[in-house]
Image (cartoon, rainbow, N blue to C red; front, side, top):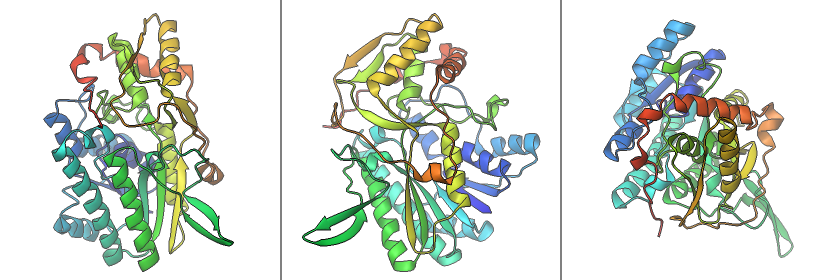
Length: 382
């Protein structure tokens, strides 16, 4: 297929581009380097320098023989969107092009406004572009498990059957976001569901849990093809942050009681999930929802896993409970259904000691570049 990846410069966007290219698809990427700009503005640079999209695409072409056209521009601007869809009219759009960080969205009014405007306007422009230029195309949108919150019932896969006063109906599963970022993802889902009903679009919404790791089949032998690796509170995912903190000798920052439980997955599984969703598209007029995770862990469990592997490697890892800056339940029920992607053929990469050891060994090579001052910013939700 012809697959257009929006947000192709990101932590997940670039690895997805290589993975789909290596699996026989014709891939193009678009980005405006928003994440890079925010990281510079907030002084939270990634652990190592990452090549720009054009240079990474050139390197990938030299190594693999696969060409990935690069389009640099702002997807909030219709002129750019129109030009993009004319030059590369896709069969499938993978939509990563959003401000991706919950803590950043809660930083201040400016960050909140940017998150709202960027995330919702880009999603709207994607919908309008598909309607105008490729109405049969399949949108694969990266949602988040954070849309659901932590309800005291099992989390179904996107939909809930309700019986009320003798009548039955199926509704989108009730959602209760824990940050403004997660709220924009709910609004994305609502926008897409409206236009699925109105225009008969085909959409897969992937409710993804936090991702960890760096290495994929396409980049393990070529370090310059690795994705961004943030370890700060604003953009770093929790397990990646804990690994860097362990290497730096910085106590692992467990928020509050540490019982917050979420569904996690290896970066390799993200790529496989997106590919499986793209290769088996939703039906016309269908909003298909998959919960994209492989295992659930509490924050305490993740911290203990890092401490255990660190101690085996001769690293003394301390764990410190800090006042929780977020508004969230610290002990709660959490049981999400996640069978849809397995039914499509997903074979999960489970978190092992070897996986953590490989990540710790890699980070140790960059230990001198770790800046302790950017690890914990104490961005308060309240």
